[in-house]
Image 1 (cartoon, helix red, strand yellow):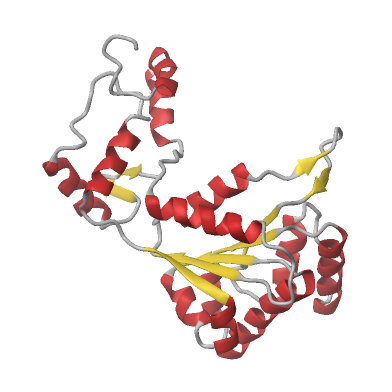
Image 2: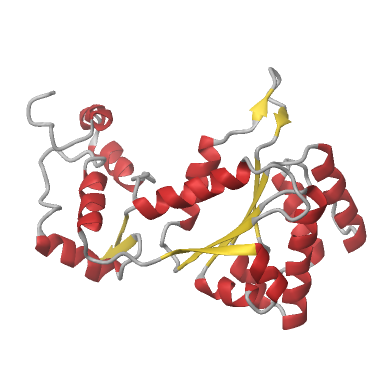
Amino acid sequence: MAIGLDHLHIGVWSYLEGSIDERVSRLYAPKWVAYSRGNEALARMAHLLNHPPSGRMPCMLLHGDSNIGKTMIVEKFVQGNPNICNEFNEVEIRKTVHLQMPANPCDNKLYAQIIEGLGIQPPVNSRGTDMELLGLRLLHRQPPKLMIIDEVHHLLAGSVREQRQLLNQLKFISNELRMPIVPLGTNEALYAMQTDPQIASRFEPFSLPKWRESPEFREFVVSFGRLLPLEKPSPLADKAIIQKLMGLSSGTNTARASGRQFCFS
């Protein structure tokens, strides 16, 4: 071990040789630090990915407050389960398709997002039925093993009728493709999906609670600190620091202080 660098992960040592600007950029780069609830979410998604096709595929709603780490978990999962491509970089086996619920959702916009998530430019000014047929045709041509839909709380932008219609579309897509779906969103998404008993029974909720001051949070912060290219050790395990971070972050994965943002994911 290099002298004086035992406070850093070995993969960070080389960053100390860079300029100040390069090291600052490294500070703001996303970082994955394993923790129990995040690992459990990844394991649940892996179970869904490998679930054999059936008439009623299990699904999971990943929900929690903003900045709690939902998107980071999904990105970690997608990175760990890449699509299989041929020598021409064309997808031959699609493990996941990752898209966002439109800000003002409707069937037409949802299928446009699906088509784009499959790497194809959706047609402009197509009717809703045409977009749906194209989206389903593309999904059947190269069916993903798992569909991930971010920002599903955007459902709440629509009326109760529109919310139910879109939720029924998700259930239909899961049944039609025999494919698990993992929506993720804020806790408000949970309320929207529990209004329909059939939807609620299909999409098992998985919550990401806020952090509390605990040995696990302290270990998480210390592990995160080992990924920062800092020349000198920082007292991140000290009780005063932990309490300060809890106060700044309100238990989420982002702390804001004096106009700066510190991400713990």
